[in-house]
Length: 131
Image (cartoon, rainbow, N blue to C red):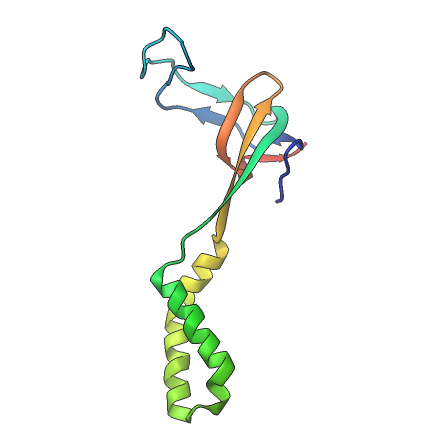
């Protein structure tokens, strides 16, 4: 799903938010104060304030797959049969790492200001759907 700033969205499922409480600015509340648990109901609507795409780092296996795949595609037809076969085996062995990288190439997080005043920041894009 492609989210854009200013887009109206709603929560796709009930959310239970837990963790440390950090006071905003000059709040008299001490850091790490216990504030309980906050639940946000599915269907709660709001507006996307920010969309952040973070590209995942390539592993050594992914870089090696790209290098060998490129070599095979460009020169495989000119290689001796045994050399090409060895290269194809190496590429095949690295393919699971490449596939996993392609499936999770980048992650998208959003900041949503809900109509009830709550702000959800750093949430994975699948948490919300278009309203």
